[in-house]
Image (cartoon, rainbow over all chains, first blue to last red; front, side, top):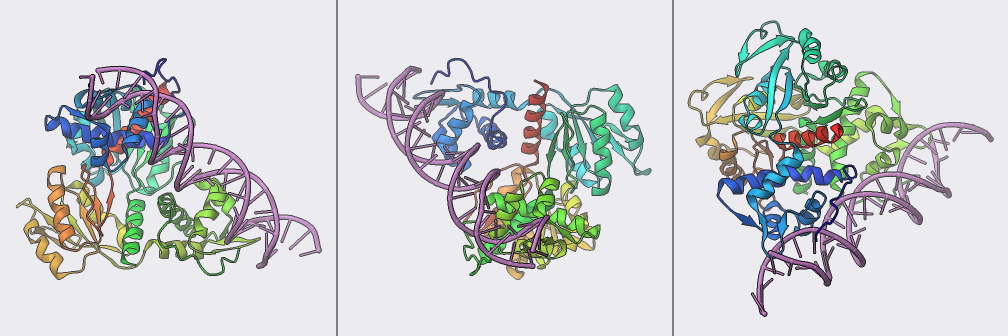
Length: 217
Length: 217
DNA sequence: TAGATTGTTAATCGATTAACAATC
DNA sequence: TAGATTGTTAATCGATTAACAATC
C-alpha cells in the first residue's frame, strides 16, 4: 500500500498490462452507464474473466486508485485509466482508404466521443474524391504529404489494400506521424520513433479457425 | 530431432503459439508469391521480428517440418501451417450485421480464397433486407434461428452495434455454431463448447494511444 | 567432408498468482 | 469495533531463449 514515491518506470510496463487496460476501461464505462458506484477487484475480475490479483497488480503500475476495505469508485477508476490511455486528449487522426472498412471507422461514434478525431480522409479512387463523409471531404492521396507537413497528426490510419500499405506507411513516417494504426494485411517495418499497431483481421480468423477445429476433436 | 511418436497433446499448446502461426502463414504466403523456395528459421525470424528459437519451438508443437542443414521448404511449411490452422477446409460462416464493417468482410477476397465462406447475411434493417451483396441476399435477422437449424454453421460473425450483440451471440450458441467472431465492443460470456474470438477495434486504438503518449515523454 | 541448420532439452527470464500487513 | 479489501512482496508458474547433439 501507499506506493510512496510513485513508480517512475514509464518504460518497463508489461505489454499485457497495456492490452488489458482498455478492457477494464470499457467494462467500467458500462458500469457507469448503469450507475454502479463501487466495485471490488474481485467482482471486476469475475466479470472480466481475469484474477483479482492481476487487476490489482496491473493498476499498481500506475498508482493507487482504490480504498482498502471498500474497493474502487467506478467513475474515478474509469477516469484514471482513461487518463493513462490518453482518452479525451483530442487526438488528430487521418484516414487513408475510403472503402468499407474506412467508412466503418468514420461512422463509429465512440471514437469521437472519446477524443479520437479523424480530421481528413484520403483515397486514390478518382470517383471517391470530393465526396463527403461525416462532414469531411475525401482528398486525393497525393495530397497526404502536404497535409502532414501542415498539421501535427498524431495517428495515421491505413485502411487500404495490402499493396498500397507500405508506401502509405512510409509517407506517414516521413511526415512525422506518431502512431500508425494498420488494418492492411501486411507487416510494416517500424521506423525509429513511430509506433505501429496492427489489426490483422484475417489472422484473427485463422486463430478462431484453429480453436474451432480443436473443439471438434 | 526426430520427434518419434508425434506429440499428441492436442491441448496444452500455448495461446501465444496459436497467435503466431497465422503470422508465419501470411509471411510464407508472400514468400511463395515471390517464388522463394527455401528459408531458415534465422531468416524467417529476422523478417518477422521474433527469435529463430521461438519459431523452431513453436513449430515443434506440431511436428518436424524442416531439414537440418537446409532449413524449411517454403511451400511445404506454408501448407503444413495452413493445415494446422484449418485453412482450405470449406468453413461455413454467416454474417449478422450488414453495415460498413460487415460489407468490408464480405468483400475481402482472401477469406474465400482460403476456404472461409460467408454463406448468409442477416440484418434487422428493413431497407437492407432483400439487397444482394456478392451474390448473397440479405435476410431478416428473425430468420437466423431457422437458418442455423437447417445448416451446419461453423462460424457466426457478429458485426452489429454493441446492443444487439449479446442476443445474436445467444442465438448462435443455441443454434450450435462452433465459433463466434465478434466485432461488437462488448464481452460475450462464452458458453460451454463455443469458442469466441473478439476483435476489439477500439481497444486496439486505446493501446496505440497509450504507446503514442509514451513515445512523447 | 565441412558447414549449416534443425528439433529438443535445459536455463533463463518474466508474468501471474498467492499471501498478508496495512487500513478504510 | 469487526469485516472487507486494498497495494505490495514473495512464490509459482509458464513462456522464451540458449545451447547442442543429430543430421542433411
